Amino acid sequence: MRRTKKLVANMVALAMAASLAGCSGGGGATQTAAATAGAAEGTTAAAAETTAKNDSGFPTKQINLIIQAAPGGESDSTGRLIAQTMEQKLGVPVVCSNKTGASGAVAFQYVRSQAADGYTIGICPAEITMVHALGYSDVVPDDMDFLGGACETPSAIIVSAKAPYNTLQEFVDYCKENPGTVVSGTSGAGSTMHIGSEVFAREAGVQFSYVPFDGSGPAITALMGGHVDLAVIGVLGAVAGVESGDLKVLAILGEERSPVLPDVPTASEEGIEAYYSTWVGLYAPKGLPADVKDTLEAAVKEGVEGAPYVEFTESKGLTRKYRDAAEFTEFVNENFAMYEELIPSLELK
Image 1: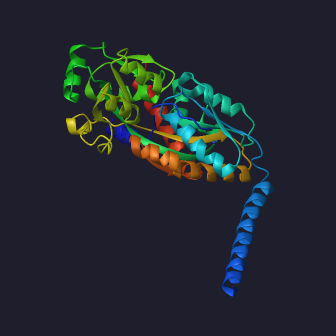
Image 2 (image 1 turned 60 degrees about the vertical axis):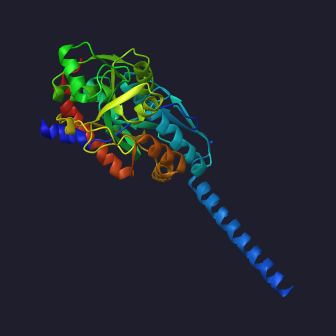
Image 3 (image 1 turned 90 degrees about the horizontal axis):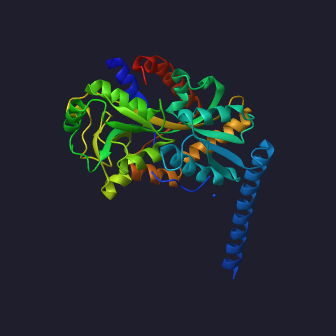
């Protein structure tokens, strides 16, 4: 099990908070000549860039970016912020839309069914490597072309600020005294929030009941409203609630503390060797033309490294982790193999 935990620890997240918009004399003569030359060089460079774009023939119209979760969570925020910079890079609108259901399988199947022309792309969290083992879909990584990774985030144990426990040990003791009555809100049955809860429960020797929602945003809202008792998700999901006084974080399921919540211990510091992280990236239907894939990969890189997403991740405690298309494809395949083994062993209900 230690090996499995470490494999899970190496997985990298997800995330995320609120729904965001996006997805748009003689000396004088010499100076004059120099300015004219400079302007000509700028015009030539701009023309060359435009010509390069026209030569590839892509893109010439709106690109649709499909997000598998409801507005307000980590995937939604990641998609919309990256789309803002992609629009500037590509010169066409990148329009985000949410297609929820079956822990992302509805969106994954939709993207897979679209033409491999670059005009439909999607946000993929770890669930894209999980839905097959969960029995929700026949989608597998080989069905997709992966464009790049965006972030990775250790999950956290998040509870209501009104909860009667203030430390991880107090929470574990409460769960043991009230087996099965503590309710964990998830972003869908079999989602990373669900599996993260189960990984922690196994290591802590406790039991949870589960209520699924169409994304992490609604799950966190339910937690803040007192409708569920727990959420296991990256610290992004907790920051706003912690700042408002509605939530508290009991532990980080990573090997290190979070830089935005430095006073919160890791679970291992509290004697529970539970590790779980999530990740997010972008993908498209299998079979993109090479020039189209290269164009999208470059735009994704700029989106991950662009100011809107960088500022967001740094302020919300997400760990930005860019992987190029080849690296991300290998990473996704490794996670798929791991989940194909892990999920059946959890006997999720």
